[in-house]
Picture (cartoon, rainbow, N blue to C red):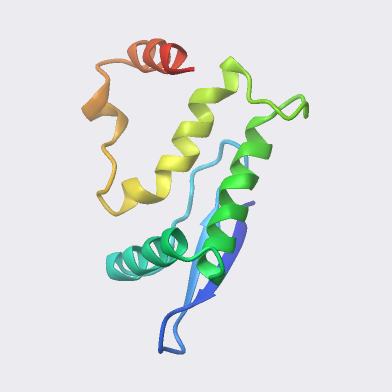
Length: 118
């Protein structure tokens, strides 16, 4: 099961909920509109003191910890591709990152490319 992150939208009682994925399971999403996602990311990336920044940081940290399978503080070459997939899952839901089939012809091509990135 994933970790839920919540942040109150600017000048609104709207509570944005972001679900961080658990290890390799599929992400359920940000649970809000594309505009809410944009607001959240802008807020998280422009103000380190914002709740959004803290929530995004903790979500990304959880992804890293989940990818650090032997708990040594490092992501292994074998887990790197899964970490990238987890981190890209929310932007992909909103069309801000290409899906793997647009980038790679086969799963093998994807793994080779990711190994080179590592």
